[in-house]
Length: 104
Image (cartoon, rainbow, N blue to C red; front, side, top):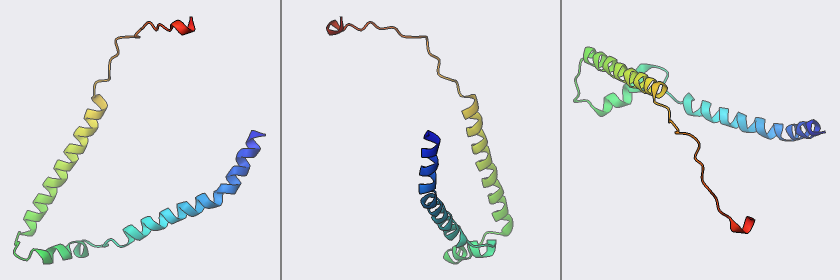
């Protein structure tokens, strides 16, 4: 009997759930669909904003690699710290006396 109730609820609400998921996927596609597809268009606007900056491509590559290494090290260190973090130690059960004269 309870299974039948669950199935009826599922059938009643499945359409609304599917439409909500479809709307969510459409929003995600719309948001990320506007992103530039090539590296040239991604940084073209930023390059126009700083015309006085004349760093060589080798400098950009070096700094990008350094940033990637630092970010990787930070993520790795955070993951290791999470895994090997000390677990809380409890001394044991705590017994307290409760006095409730109205219950006696």
